[in-house]
Length: 329
Image 1 (tube, rainbow, N blue to C red):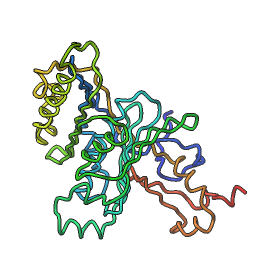
Image 2 (tube, rainbow, N blue to C red):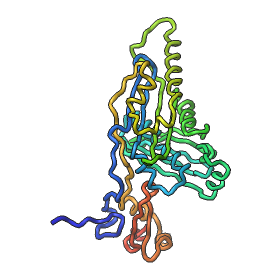
Image 3 (tube, helix red, strand yellow):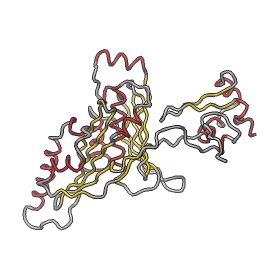
Image 4 (cartoon, one colour):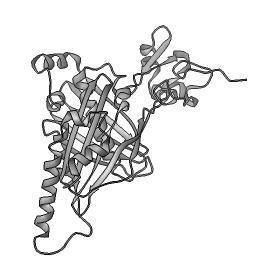
């Protein structure tokens, strides 16, 4: 006999802290979401991220204005590009907090390529900004604040975090500033996010200057490496947003257009997937940190509804099944 299908968002006979079922969200994987590459004999490596339909699955669930969704989409593609350059177990996140209409921008990617992202918006302030600037920049949306990257490998490992002030007009500018000031690394970042008839799409191209192996030694070698880096930057600078978001242009073809004369070599592609990690158990644990009076205030008609900020799924808890702090004392 086939057991009945249960909805993890609704109260059930299973205690909340034991219910780890995923909510009804897309089970979507983009097998070739990240294409790493390098230029032979040149001090250049990079990643090209194409989220494809994954961008629409992630962004389409958020009831946010297009200007904010574009910013979240760029953050998702950028986070995937940076996370897949590292060797770690856990999650890598981008976070920007500012005093603008978008007070929080957050995206994270696990070592397996599971992506999620969200933003917090002051609707009144955003509407005022859009009335004056219909196509606001990331700087106008975020305002002044800080920009951080965090690699969290769990409670048994030291968490690494780099933080800098928000500087630059675009999210790409802010990232370049981060690497220049925090990591002393030369980089170039190109981001694009937009919506077509096929839905939302988001892409990131990240170049990094690295030490080369097997380079030709001798007088003028440093100048040659500097020229090779400048050439790669100039070629990447010709990339148009329309090309980055074109589903008909594969990652391999896009990189070939840019770097075919520069010793382009691609590495093994990496998958990306829909990565919200919410469950009834996680949200129940959050509720258990509140006192009885707070829980009573949250309840309406005997139920508490919590919405996952990443996938926008509502979870319903009967007030009677949530004990809170006092109930465990």
